[in-house]
Length: 384
Image 1 (cartoon, rainbow, N blue to C red):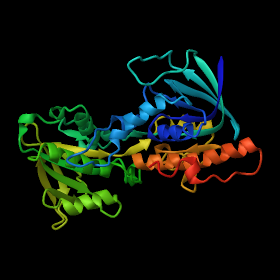
Image 2 (tube, rainbow, N blue to C red):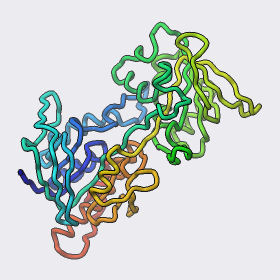
Image 3 (cartoon, helix red, strand yellow):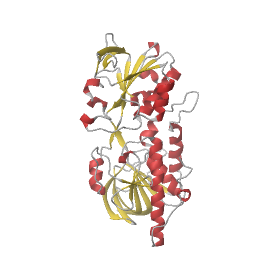
Image 4 (cartoon, one colour):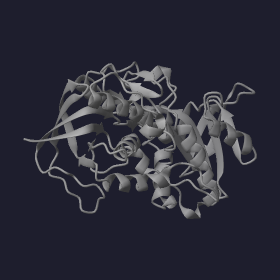
């Protein structure tokens, strides 16, 4: 069985993992970046650019750049298609055992799998967990008819069409003046289903998608259904205030989506806040703003790393100067494994974790009391 040593093991190759690995590698530390899948970037790498005449600040354009930087960095080893089988040790002396899915080597990918063994033991001083989330399965909201009615789609479906430059896959180009209904908070802020939290990104993503669609197809008409403005991001509030003439907003979420009166249409029922009565409205497409759910491996990983899950299934943690700390010294969290967050939130959490990890590494190297590290020295400042 092959073994290797490194300063830090980063588990998860999404935006938080990439950000933290680059920051620490640029300071001269050695990093092993472990990814369960075959490529890096996570969900962020799948998102389309939302720019119109101006940048939408969606960060999509930076993902490929960061992936290339990680793959070409001399202090970062990347291991893909690997499963963590065991985890032992403590701060300064952690050890994980990896089991490889196969001897993966994809020459078309920018990712280089460093292993040729079926098993690998890696030792490190620190560990950072950044293994992300899974998208909420909209089919669980049976009354919204996702996967039953083809005209009901998700923000991920729209995003995929934009990224592949195939908008016609969700609506034919010949359709003309189409009506879209965007429904917020599908799978989040839902106490009945145990998901009573805000997913952070679905509102922002919907805003950017509508802006992008309006830019490409000015003839499209958009309605948006939301719960309230207070909980939504500043971007959503600004969007609400500046698009009153082009987007119709309805407070309150539709109760049901059914087949429309004509082929290719759908109808939904929503409460009119003025009258208190249900109204029937017809659309060409209904778009569900799905939220985040815990990573599908959270239960196994919770037992493996000895970190309990909170009531929603995300990893429990404490806050220390912006970092997500676990009950184990030297073991940190960043990104959506600790709770819903967006790209910028994941980056900030990753850099906050770097600040603490670098402090720990200096303490371990000195063998003395904790060493205070400035944020400039740790790479936290100027990286967002």
